[in-house]
Image (cartoon, rainbow, N blue to C red; front, side, top):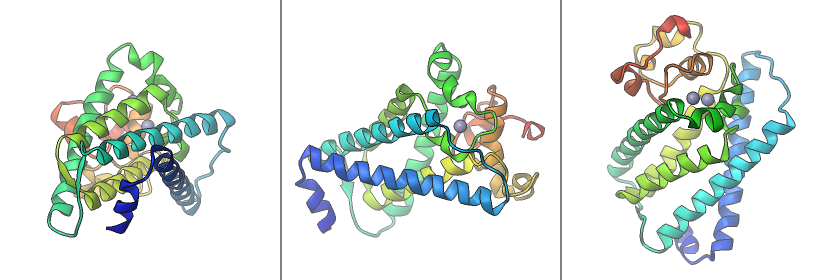
Length: 236
Ligand SMILES: [Zn+2]
Ligand SMILES: [Zn+2]
């Protein structure tokens, strides 16, 4: 792919600029998606505060640096990416999705059960009823932690580039859904449809913001059910 060839020969600064623009577009798309859904469901949204903009801006910059580190590791041959449409697109997407879901569950659980909660993660929990911007309202240390987990996974195997892109899109969609602050599937929507019971729906992560003792997963409720941290439905 010519796009990859161009990236392969870019300097670190050029790469950073490309990834900064890419992360800004992802940020804009995530906010746009989240607030448009709220608008469509006639859920009023408060104006984003200066503090939220500032924290979200820092998150975007850190994410760009993490992407840059990934890009440099790829340029130097430490991260291997395959290209092309084949069955690995599907299998790698599923592997990345479940591996990151498990690792983030563990990371999130440990943050909640240590001194790190008070100094790092409590900031994200200032929102009892989250809004889309809260996806980016994170302490810098937390953003770096999630970024390092992601780089560790990428370093651990040869993944299909399309699967990586697909996974990153899913990551944003689930992040936005988790911070909608209301359940578009209806009050008991996620209970009505069996498939959604296993997914990280809006009410699933919203329940974690309301009760910090459970629902540590992000994309699925698999790990919470398995490790008995799943909040009962009436908490949602
Ligand atoms: Zn939490
Ligand atoms: Zn959250």
